[in-house]
Amino acid sequence: MKTRIISELKNGLCLDRREITIMHEQVITLIEGIARRSFKVKSVLYGRAKAIAIISILLIISISYGLFFYFQDSTERIVKNNLFAQQRDRQIIATRDLSQHIASDLSLVTARLDGLSNSIYLQQGDFTSNETKKLMQVNFLNIHGTADHLFIVNNNNIVTTDITARDAKTFVGTDIAQKEYATQARKSLAPVFSNGYVGLDGKTRIGIVYPIINAQTGKYLGLVGATVPIIQFLSNYENIYNINSQFLVAYDKNKNYIATPRTQLLGKNFFANDVQEFFRYNQIQNDLYHKVFSARPGYAVYDFGSGERINTGYPVILSGKPSYFVFVVRPTSTIYSDVDHVLLSQRIQTFSLLAGATVAIVVLIVFLIKWNTLLRREVHRRTMELELSNDEIRDHLTLVEKELEPLYFDSESKSYKNMPF
Image 1 (tube, helix red, strand yellow):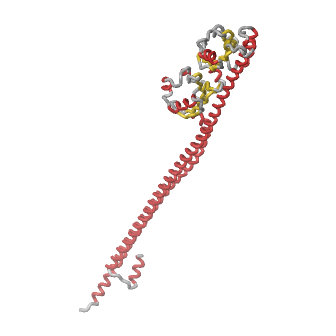
Image 2 (cartoon, one colour):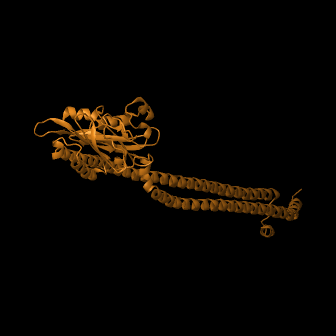
Image 3 (cartoon, helix red, strand yellow):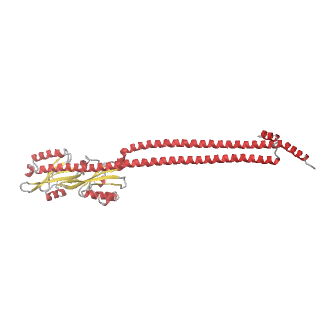
């Protein structure tokens, strides 16, 4: 530039000092303005790009995790709801079938008692002969899976014959006049299914008795009956010992416990204060039991403090009447345990995909940060170059100005000499 200006001056394009100074200042101002605008534009662009990148990354991460948790929870909720509905339906059907099987087995015992009461030996009042005992033994073998005693009671309420398993204690000679089922059978002259009671050996039992009535005279001769160890009997159908899995609870007509894993409740009435206090007066549970005790099947889901449970209840109908009531109880947590590992595996797979995407985003963030840093360094370098160029131009203009001074003074001298005086 310096060479060009000097050449132009030598070719007659001489400038005065003021014009040179103005040109100098304009050039400097122009260069500084360009540098400032360039730096400002790049800074704004870089700042906006960085903000947009950060916001976009945060939105991607937030939306990804939000969708993950939403769809994961929605899927698990649907799966668990379907499992619960299936378990509820299966449990209702299973409880109904259980009730019918219990009724069938107890009715089989009743049928045996009916046959014995009408046998020729008992119709004749022969309660102790060898023939009678042999007949009783044959019938006992057919029901020993259900009953543990098969006995005959005479008209004076004394047990005259008692067939039991080998080495078991018999109750021959025992007066059962105080037994409620004996009184009911004598009064109604119909088969009776007793409430639960504790035998002399400490076992909870129910009694089934059938009146012996002379077919010709209609005279009451006595009773033939069987006792059923109810806990042992019901354990053939369902768990009655472990409350941490599906278990069975049974009640008699008086709403007293005859089978339950909570042995401290055996013999107690469900609506007794201590029992209600144990269950914390759970209204949902009470409504279910009122319904089932009214001979209507039902189910309920509730939690009295030991975890949520689904309870299905059904009456046991014998001789056309509800004689016992069975409930199948299952912790809802065990319903989902079968598929928890599947859901966990699915959750891990989905989360792994999301984690991979997150890692990729983090890598992108790091890359963008580094890229932004490099850009800033480049902008700074370019700015420094512009500033150095500005300094160089300033120096060149200063040198040009110094070289032009002789020409300027020569021009002034000539002009002075040519002035007329």
